Image (cartoon, rainbow, N blue to C red; front, side, top):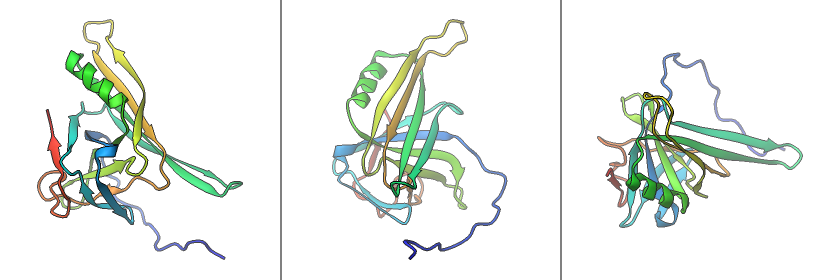
Length: 187
């Protein structure tokens, strides 16, 4: 007896795609009123009166990954989303904000370099059910004059389903008319 059935195959897609992350958006997990996700897509986000916080990242520095772990013996499968974030320049304001990020569970939305057919960026949601935690990081000061001074932070989580894609936006990320009370704070 089959537990599920497949719904389609997959051909060879275009070989010209882009990797990388343009920006990360953080929402405090317990401030999210609701995230509606079905069939791999987030169709609504309700933040109430709270904001989503945008962090623009240096090109080619930040990664978003998801590890699939299954056990035939136990009959289980789960997903581990991971974000490795690089922030250049050391400031006391950043130190304080990083401390706050480390003290809370967050939902992370990643705006990727990959694009939809209409030219809009793909945005994925990580930790939408169980949240993500900052579990590692370094403050890098460098030795040589040209070395980077900044932060490297790692967030991870555990989810029962793979990360969903956020429904397409109109002009700017998260301006989808179906979204409720979503405001983005950039500074």
